[in-house]
Length: 266
Image 1 (cartoon, rainbow, N blue to C red):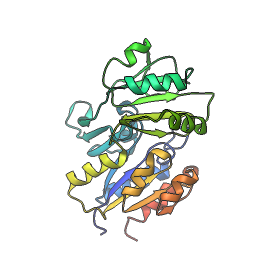
Image 2: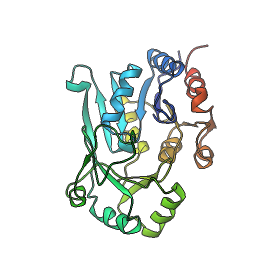
Image 3: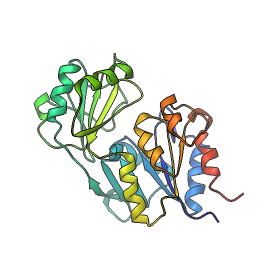
Image 4: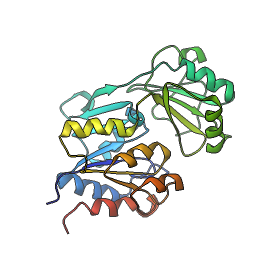
């Protein structure tokens, strides 16, 4: 049998398609890898509320999960209330970044994550873009408390607009990743999927070489560089494919299946 690997999987655009559907061949492949003794760990930009249903659909009830682009690490245990505990939740003061971003993007929507609950928002986001039931609050309340993540969204903009705007602002003391559109996630400095997964690797006592990561977006760049074997999905932008060790098929063609199959006995 292949020695156990830490298998780190992004969710959207990697494990599920862009409509949020988990295809049966992918689910079967994840189950097979788990049953073969590998440590399957979801590593996602989603919050806890949005990650739990995917864990449930995949039958992942033990181990770990990384949420909010690395700001939150969960330990999964079916004996615990809700099936998990929060091992780490790294927070930061969102006020300085929010003030700068509001000046640069005055019409953008803003969301801050409420751990395990959902999001507080400046105004409603497009349907289905945020997990849980978002709660509209005054702008001042968005800045009032430390948060694990701050999200800025402009339904009328592009990712290029956001990249240019963020460069003009020069955000300090935080990490940021532009998503699949005009979507910007801001997390505490030093936080990334890669940093959180390194913590998981150490907890499991695995060698650095026993790491595999699969993703499709800019918030996966550090994770793909960190893993001994970083795999980009065929639907990933060129910048993501360029840093990967290899590129698999499109999410709609179940590209993850071939990657996971390579960990199984012939």
